[in-house]
Image 1 (tube, one colour):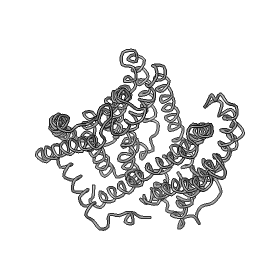
Image 2 (tube, one colour):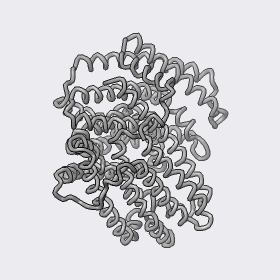
Image 3 (cartoon, one colour):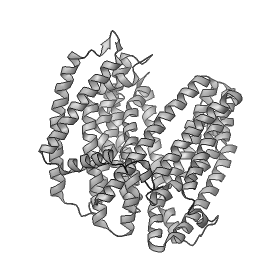
Image 4 (cartoon, helix red, strand yellow):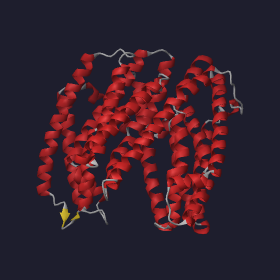
Length: 533
């Protein structure tokens, strides 16, 4: 992998990660505004069901379904040029806009049944309000689906900043509209704010594509073989989405049957790994996807192999140390993040247990994102779908076998085991397509285990000392500053031990990552403006 490509990947990942963090902060601020304006009353309940359970689903499914568009668009452009590629994009955009408009109209008509299926409100007024909010917010699903397509087109051109900025603008406009409209219009103003935010994001993405928009037509070329190819690739993705959603529903159903607090503690425990996945692997997956797609269309297996293995090794180098820290420091992490108000010491204990098992699977979760992007770049959506469905069967089986003995921990353990098996299966299947050398992989794994062992020893030693030297609580309440000092001290000590051991073991990958990060921090050209856009 060339140094220029590595720098572009690092810069793109940094930009997306930065905007993702900013977006998470804005999302939290939006919740604060909603809480201040509407509390936990009838309007807030209606909005939560209308958006989180119904409208958001219509927004996110097209986003995931359109993932196979990027390698097809890249291949068409590389082989036949921009005009032909945008003719294909015109067909997809037309079909997407028409189908989403039809789905939105059908959902608006069937909103009472959707709300009834997603909730069981005791008050008819709450249900009626949720129906009204669904109908107000449904246009955002159309805008979100077209934004997803525009994002993929920008990513195909290695332009990562505009979509990230557009998503940030979406949340910013949403909050501003919420503040401007909610007092005068009530919860309906919050629903209109969702539509305004999604429309603003689409407009910014469209503006970034202004040089290409003249090639778009509202038409469908039904004879285009690539359109038929997209139709072949989408159903396995849809099956994967539906099965994953079923697994999530079953997980919380199982947890809710175990008694009070188990379902919520599972959600709190999963929040930390999910946030980490959004910040690094998700960003890396977005950035490497167009590069992998170009390499696949150019028939460059050696370059594709190098990028794939470098990405997988980077995930291991980042998340093996993070896993160690989260396993050892899970209780102070939970205390620092959540212990206040009614989230007491027993809540910490209940949440720290599943976090232990989730933390064991962090590396697998990160590698899964890279593997999925790799398969999609090869225009293979069937293999990940079949393996993923098998993984869900394994997941449910583990929960059914262990839930009586392990309670909600069985769900966290099942997630880690099933994801690890999925990653192993996808990796073994991909070996037939890549020129992989076992010697290099085994050498890397052995050195990584050595560095991880050194880090674990350092973390356990320093944490033992910090526990005695730094008071972490005052009575029943944690001292947040002390917890932060303890976490920071132990984490820094562990990371220093890991890097030192990796350096002594001559892990070239560690040196490359550190060098890339150092160049990123010291380069004057490393800002968002250096990403094409």
